[in-house]
Length: 246
Image 1 (tube, rainbow, N blue to C red):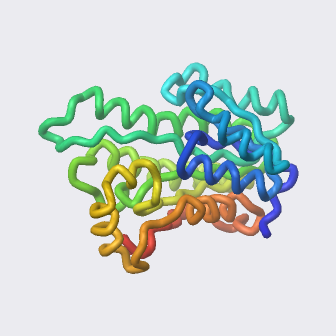
Image 2 (cartoon, rainbow, N blue to C red):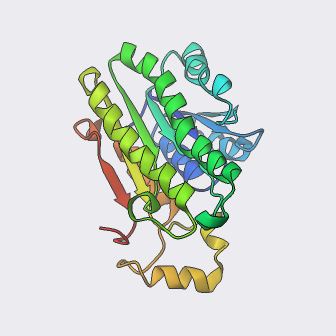
């Protein structure tokens, strides 16, 4: 089992789905987890983690509020003395065909999915550079690699994360900081459940492994990339998609 004892991790979008699973997995492997979400939405995640005897605390933050967001890593260092792992997972969709897409829907998706990662990573780098080590992991999507009709805004934001991570990986590698991407495929979450049973079956038929992914599949990948075992991996896009895109 991977050992993250003594590590401090920040996970955004930790209230549900992939973010919640990652937070729980990191904590189970010994990390102190700061579970970030809007309002008090992370409280159930934290209660679940602490109820199992692991360490976690909630953080209320709107990732589109850059002025507040950029202070988050420094606040974590003040409380815990370090920040070792950043999982930038918060994301939204505002689907529509491009001809009908409103500018507000474009801006909201880019701000949440892409710009927030820039703000957080820039702020998290300061303590990581001083520590001469850290893990930055951004959650992209198979849609950022292959596209999807009605999701030009989402695809652009997720593809942007891949380019961002590769460039940043080159900038900080000499200081022992790795930057990697996880690109999930169709994962069983609230968003995919909204497709209905037939929609999920139709998608599963397009996946070589024959099923939708589970949030734990993504969480396992995140914990590996956050661990010492992944110390020689950086600038990588890890596809967790069942072979949907190769």
